[in-house]
Image (cartoon, rainbow, N blue to C red; front, top):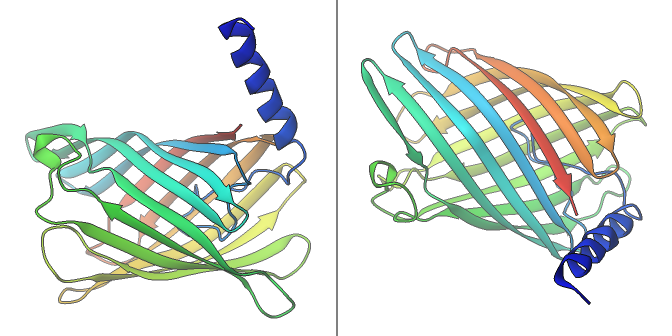
Length: 247
């Protein structure tokens, strides 16, 4: 079989296989990651572009952020996160690749009545796998529990709890998020969310955001979202666009 024909056949097989699964579920655009896993032997790619205003003199752009996920089994997926960032602070601009994160998501509990669907997500930021100006001093682990309750056919309540390290100090930052999702139609969903970070020895910052997703097909989704800071030390606002697909 010729290489082009083989690749086309492989791609078509992936699409047909994907159609047998439920509609794509993504970890974006909200900060609350879903407990749902990528289906077995499928590759899911979640890309996004975002702009964030930290204060009057600082802003950052991610162009793009890409989350690569692959289903190893029904209960486990591998994850890789790559981001290209452009940061501005006063008159200084810095751009390059943020440290690459490798990780996993593992199912803990299936939803059953009042018992929520629960998974654990873990990542490790690699200090030297980045552009020179974005290198870390240490390995930077992250983990969170992703939990979801189905309240009705149209409404779901999701929340995350966990911690992360910045790669420069040994002090953790505790993280939380709480989101309510609503299905407007079979293809359009919306959500509102609060989330925040609580460094061990610094003031916590809290944020509010919301957005929409549109299911292009069973295996593709686009999203738009935006948020504001609720405390003085939180970013002023952010805006993001994204596209996700699986094969």
